[in-house]
Length: 357
Image 1: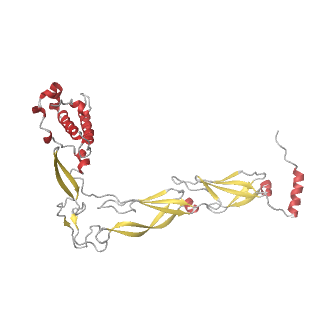
Image 2 (image 1 turned 90 degrees about the vertical axis):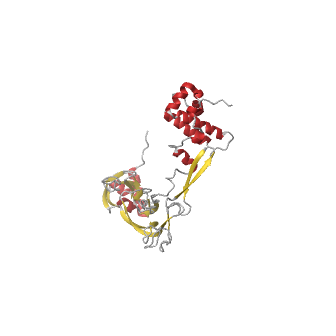
Image 3 (image 1 turned 180 degrees about the vertical axis):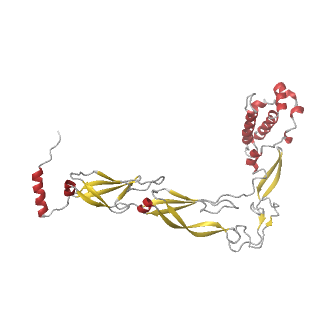
């Protein structure tokens, strides 16, 4: 007769292990050696050994007797035998093996799927905000049967295969005991009801595809890649579940002469030599219309002027950024005789620029 191993050794726990430690070790080993998961030779014997050890160590009185007398305490004290082992309280373990404990198989309500829509807008619309209308196609609850799937005036009947529970329970017996296998009813697909007179509008589906036009408010200051969430504008929920959301993701066109820098905008202002040297007053385009800018005499290329509050609205707060105007002195590409003569006289007057050092 084979010598029994120490129960603590079987479960791999120390003698002062807590009840939770014992339970956790048993769960791990039960998964590892269960015959439905492990087909190797000897796995069934190890599974039986693990259950026997747990049956003793999980019971306070049996564990105390075992700690004092070991296996010599006798089978009469410990053994109801493996066939009578109580699996109650461990439905989460055997649910993974056999598909549920009898309450989880039936289909329940669930939230609808989210939808995504890509919206292209202009630079001005992103900076100033706007309102756009978009067309989407989504699944909605049938307006005729309101999701019941039955023609108005008729009712679905209780499924006779599962008696309206939505699940089929089968008892499985083996040398390791008796288990209950729970599965979704193949007749009603978990509904618990059979539709005998389907809705003519949705053909008994309970849902239909519809094209909808939705108004979307684009907040001022939105940037390329930002998204807007429209709660409840996605796909319809299942069995009364909440509808999903619609996410509108924005892409922004480039502006012909403005560049975004955070909430500021940059504009490069081209001026000629005379305007830069003598100073001038020029018209500068902004998001809010043209505005006048004074260029002081002797201004150099790269000098930056700030037009306060002429930038982009702050998306998360009040106020606006600024418009930065960077000066760029433009060298003429061609000169007529009179212009060339004037530049030659100016060159003689100014003389060469002396180097540094």
